[in-house]
Image (cartoon, rainbow, N blue to C red; front, side):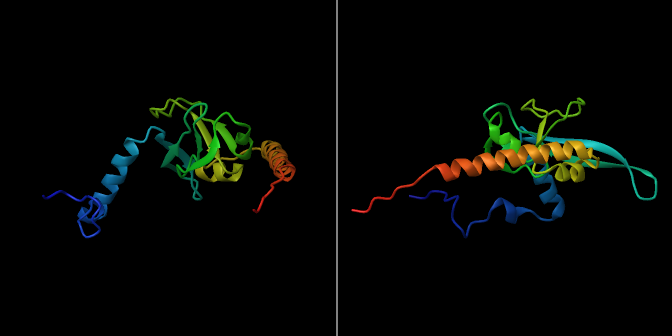
Length: 158
C-alpha cells in the first residue's frame, strides 16, 4: 500500500521549490500576514544629510493578559507572561497612535532594553525614563535572585 511520506528527508520540500529570492520574500510576506501580532508601519526620519526619508518597520505585538511576552522587533516569544510581574524585565511600550492593525488587537510592545526600542523605532527616550526602568528591572532581578536562594533542594539517595 502506498502512502505519501511528508517527512521523508529525500522528498522535495517547499523551501527547495523556491526558484529565486523573490519567491522566498513572497513566502515570507505571506507568513507574516497570517501572524496575528505582525504589523508594518512606515516611519519618517531625517537622515545624516538632513533629508527626509521613509522606512518600513516590522513590529510584533504581544497578545493580551496571560499570553507569552513577544519581542517587538524579532517576534521571538519569551517564557514570561503578559500581566505577570516578570513584565518588569522588559521595556514596555504602548504604541497608541492608531497605526497598528494586528489581528490580536494589541498595541503593547516589549523590548529587552530601552536602547533596543530606540534603535528599532529610530527615536530617543529621556534618560530619566531609562534610569527608572533600569531601577525597576534591577529590583525584579534582585527579587528573583532572593527567591532562588530561599528555595532549598533536597536530594534523597536510596
